[in-house]
Image (cartoon, rainbow, N blue to C red):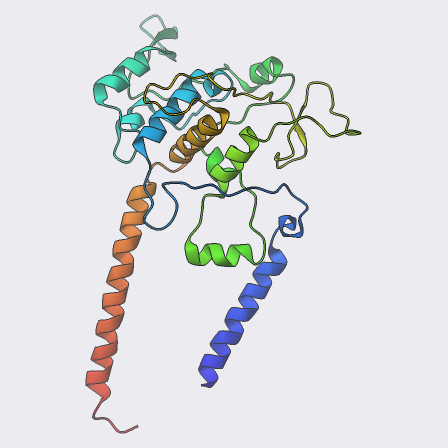
Amino acid sequence: MKTMIKSVRGALLAVAAMAVAAPAMAAGEGPHIERQQWSFSGPFGQYDKAQLQRGFKVYKEVCAACHGARFLSFRNLAEEGGPGFTDDQVKVIAAEYLVMKGPNDDGEMEEVAAIPSDRWPSPFPNQQAARAANGGAYPPDFSTLAKARAVASGFPGFVFDMFTQYQEHGPDYIYNLLTGYEEAPDGFEVPVGQYYNPKFIAGQTLAMAPPLSDEQVEYTDGTPMTVDQYSHDVAAFMMWVAEPKLEQRKSMGFRVMIFLIVFASLLYFTKKSVWRNVEH
């Protein structure tokens, strides 16, 4: 009984410590981020291939003009757990882009059509060029953005997240940001070159203009062509880019949990069998 009391006390102290360490978002100082429904949330969640293909289309036609994805290779688009493109489709997609390779026999770099093993090309040659083209702001790379950008749940939200295994704060934030542009309230002065968005995690204004509008990207599968749908799809695609092995990780985790349960049961019954005739 004393051991149990100590364990419960330790757990309560750990929760209290985490609550103290929780970000100021819990006190309402940050933007309110509304949670969305994602096919890949939860311990058994999986990516929706059709949604990933639509999200890739939005990224390719809109976002890629400013945002790179340096950890994404063209061939990843055909890998298991991804958008589900075929190898031939990936070759066609890659051939639309030029990448620098070399040096050749003359010791010079040359620009050639990309192949599936190449990484997604950056829209700018360097960070200085990117800032110069965007009024001094540097468009972040999309490779890990869905995992790096998130608004913490705070206490007690993060406690429930531990039990539900909710880890989609990044896509939630991206969706809210893309759909959060609005007119600034009276008395609020928006700096020149900035746009009002109360969902922005670092303030209420940012240099990125509203990137999406209705009917901007053509969907051929009958999906509504709205800002809301575009935002959902590209946020899901960014989550896949940031964690392409999510489905494999969850599958392995489930098998590990089953193994641990069986192993713990065997240890329990072994202990009972060995010590049942021993006086205590």
